Amino acid sequence: MEQQIQQPKPQRSFFGKHIKWTFIGFNILMLIWLVGGVGSASKEVANAGSDAAQAGAAIGTGLGAMVIIFIWTAGAVILGILTLLTRTKR
Image (cartoon, rainbow, N blue to C red):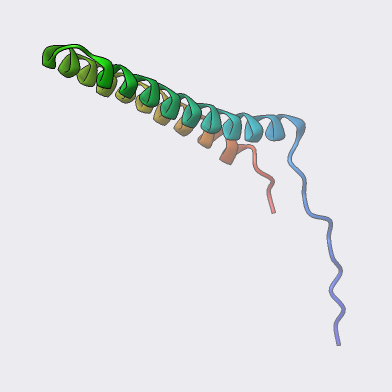
């Protein structure tokens, strides 16, 4: 019966760990930003005086959410690629 020798699990470098936690933190920050921004903007839509003001606030909320999602997607792709490139080799 052959006995397998366990090799220690390779660890990420300091730079790799920094990139990984930056990626996680960025995604958490963007989620908070999106939820907070849309939540506060929806209050403005509800408190708008006229139908035109409500329509304008709704359009602005949609545009703001799209900008946040664009920044989130671009940052997640860039940081995700860096996270993959700094992972340990087996």
